[in-house]
Amino acid sequence: MLRELHAADRQAILGLAYQRERENLFLIGNAESAAAFSENRFFGAFEGTTLRAVAAWFGRFGSFVAAGGEADIPAVVDAALAAKVRIEAVPMVQPLASLVVEQLRRHGLIPRPEHQSLFLELSRRAFRPQGSAARPAREEDRDALVLLQRVLHERSGDAPITEQERGRIMIEYAVVAEADGRVVSTATAGVRSRRFAQAVGVITDARFRRRGYGAGCMSALCERCFAEGKEAVLLFTEANNLAAQALYAKLGFTVIGDFLLAEYQL
Image 1 (cartoon, rainbow, N blue to C red):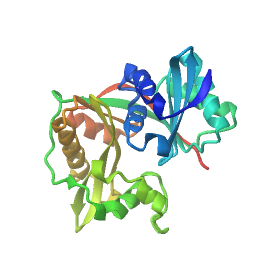
Image 2: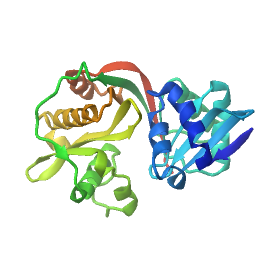
Image 3: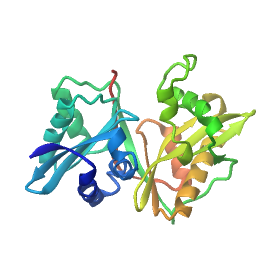
């Protein structure tokens, strides 16, 4: 049976997602949030009363993920598309990521671009802090963080900032570094589960790179996550981004798998 999932299904979604906690952080973090069923949509495939697979569309970001048995993934992807969700990105651990992207391709959705990435983990024991001034982000930093996000996604910094862009900034989970009186680097613990946090939006203004700001932000973010009791911090980075990989290795991160970020132009 296929159907859309609602608040009464939250525990079933989380029960499935926590079977592979590392891989399903985006799903877990969004399903556990207070706005889970007002901002997002979830679609499930059942065998009897058992949830076998779930697809989730996160409205704030337009991102789309799936979890569960490989045989059931195509069906939940189809259910989401039938509901006319607008998919902007698929950020998932391999090999399920390719299965989702291939099913979307069958419906004529072609990723542009498709980022082959590495999946990294930093345990509390392996953490090597890097000293640099970084602080928790504040509300007045929101627009500056939007502009940094535009750099990451190669968007123009000259266009007026929209409320949608402002709404995508998770101030409460971000840290920033400043130089010359303005924010030049940031990192965010975008989603969390019982044991893990996932770092996203790790960006440094190109004019201030190789000065320790990115390492300082990541170090401060990891310290914060470990202080909250998380046992590891996860992140993904493009396979050809050797500078970022060197930064993460300095902090103690190691590669644990492959990740795919497929972006779709609306």
